[in-house]
Image: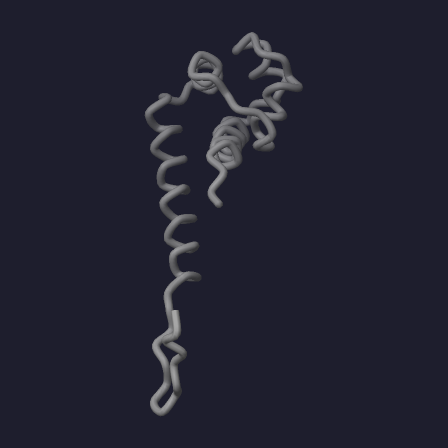
Length: 100
């Protein structure tokens, strides 16, 4: 199962680290508690749209870029999950139970 909040946290953490910012700096700029941002980055808490906008502003990254990156990661996880559900065709001579 794809957890949107986990992927969102990964994208936000990556954006923060790429900019060389600490949680404390983002917390002060976004006016959000450091602990809450940490929980969001670890996928333990959901971010409201207002909070997400504040975090994006503090990170100087467009909200649309963050959502696009998360969307791309969701698509990758869905594709990987679909690959594990692909039915395997029976081998030649193999009897298939069709009593379903």
